[in-house]
Length: 402
Image 1 (tube, one colour):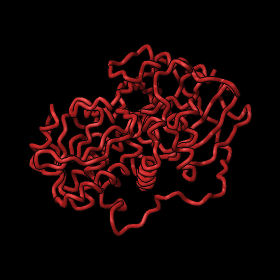
Image 2: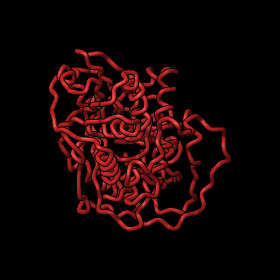
Image 3: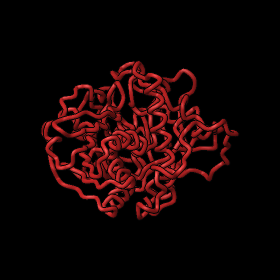
């Protein structure tokens, strides 16, 4: 899920600074061994300037066009994701969880970090617990490195929490609290982000558009305006990373002149960023995993010691928010996220954010996604949909085009 994009103090929320398998997994360039890829910061490039696009189609925003309301919990850890190995009853458990709202965005790079620990064990068979963004991506990358992989999961796509995310490239979304952003953490985060960004570019142009670049419009009421609920947010101050560490991946933003857009806002800027059509993307990953000989076994784990009963002696624990109960890990904090999807609309292939009105909208093939956020989301594990919240967000969206 994406956090409020209107808060310039949050790396997750500064979407203006955001940058952006084939039908057969073997068609994708491998990320392991024998293949060079640029994941370090590039030299400064000439500024990118946008041409004036065609007039935008106004979004038909009304409550009767809501076709789905979904809620999930983001697994936030103030220290950042836990990616480390521990020994347990003759097994090696490689933990890889706690990615906040950046699970999809960091999935490929996070998988690389976890697999580096897996390789140290020298095994040829691997168990992955969890079938969400991190688990499925890690399993697929392990297969491409030559391992035989079995996924153990209680739920499968599209029922896993990852399937209910907003689907926007946001690698710093609730990734860590600012006080924990040490140089070592920032270096690891940058590696994960750049590896993932490169991987997503290999998915462009595929049928179903699992990944695509879209224009986003940033609306504000001018200097001095504040986002909705400012001062009421209970969330910590998040690490600000994208603008500093991924600036070379970020297209310039362009300020639009009055009359050149349909928005009722004092200031409008345009940029571009990648969007994941999650259902198409997840199906693609799952199909690739199965095509490469992977298997999935339905299983529910109630305690950490059960991980050491699996036939595979090396296990990747990619249980996301489930790690809180499984490992009794109180460092994993739930952050509630609710989205509504409107009926897909021809011509609406852009997103927008309007902090003052607490709006964030994402263009997806399965519908126009409208996020609803509340100051009480942090620490809230309630996944009961609240239709009134989404209807209010859709009403605010309608006012943007008034």
